[in-house]
Image (cartoon, rainbow, N blue to C red):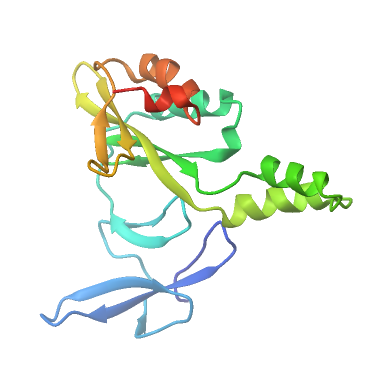
Length: 195
């Protein structure tokens, strides 16, 4: 039985194997089985789904981030007034916060209601569609600076045309302290004053 994975958008992908020009196996996910279907995940690999629903096979290496550190960031995001606009992702040595691209559900619902286009159940359908198909971009990340002390440094994405890169936003410290200071500023002008 080929390995399949259904992402958050409800799309099912099949794990397939091809061969590189050098003769090495290359694994990828496709909507329809292509090449040689794979019935077992290769040793040392695992299935990963990105915040935007992209499915891939990644190396299964030990995470440097502790579960309680991820929980601290997720809790801070849940307390944000517009928490539906944010997602948290863990990479090898960092925790990233992603922000919804474009208008959020509440803004769309309000705009439609002002135009007299609100219908019963529309608000719930809009929220569900954005939850399923919304695209997110990274805006904040907490990078493990010292594994023994469990200190992190925070960076935010800078949108100045001459920079367009990650910039440090303060001193290092425990992730729970940094999240309390920075996450409430997401989506506000105060976030862009961090540097």
